[in-house]
Image 1 (cartoon, each protein chain N blue to C red):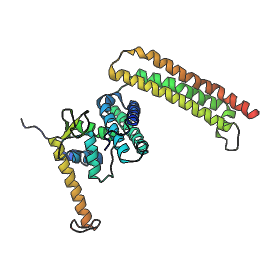
Image 2 (cartoon, rainbow over the protein chains, first blue to last red):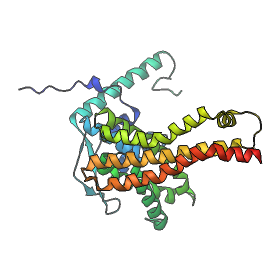
Image 3 (cartoon, rainbow over the protein chains, first blue to last red):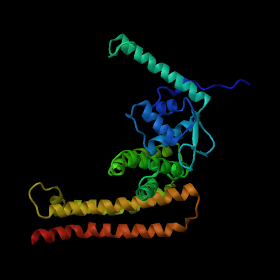
Amino acid sequence: MKEDLPDVNEFLPLTPAMAHVLLALADQERHGYSIMQEVQALTQGQISMGPGTLYGTIKRMLKANLIEESEERPDPEMDDQRRRYYRLSGLGRRVLRAEMERLAMLVNAARNRKILGSSEGTL
Amino acid sequence: MNSNPRPGRIATATALYRRLLWVYPPAHREAYGKAMAQLFEDLCRDACRDQDRWGLLRLWPHILLDIARTSFHEHIDQLKQGDKTMTRRQWSIMAISAGFPLFLWLLGTLANPIFAGRLIATHNNPAQPLGWLIALGILALVGATGLAQFRHFSTLNATSEAAGGSGRIIALSLVLIIPATLLVLLGPALMQILALR
């Protein structure tokens, strides 16, 4: 029996918090603090998530099967505390790709209207 | 590099943050409370390491705003999912006990033109500040009663505990409601006495 795959467009547009968390998980599994640090790095410090925002977003994404939880384990680069790790699910990766394609389309439209400079030049 | 700067202050801040997690729904607190406290501790460590001695203090406004906004959303989400953490009877108890002093106050305001006049007067009136203080005191006591009951009853259902603590919450409610009611009944008289002196 062929499993019905959810339509990724149902999840679009993503909230900024969800988009940033999915992007942070795109390259590797991370725990909450690492996700927060990665989001800060991706946005050059413009977005800093508090614990309530981060774990509220994680809760909703777990429920929507966009991310999965890995086993708890210590972070070798940090202290000995066991931390909960998260990773993208297959659906999450597809939703993230769809969201980035949507945003890329918007950026292209902005460039065509001279709102943004070309990708080769400076603004 | 100091890997754990100012551990005493961080531990104190984390303990305070754990207390503040009380405002979240019990289910959310149970599932994510520990992880949220852990992340807060990490943020404190960063604030102490990267900034000056006031770094930890500057973290708090951001954290308090985060708590206020997200706890509200979590409660709304829980209600939207139909996860009714309080029975209709418990909502009624809360509404009656918290609403009773408010009802008395409204009744007194309508029945006592002098009291009503003092509260809405725009001219300089020595009794007016006291009137507002009384009103704020009533609202604070009523609000505290409602909040205590809400927290107790929602915890009760979420954890399936026996109703043994209900006696304590009702006693606490009386402690809050009685002064609120006295303020309602005696407030106008007090204001009139002050104005006549």
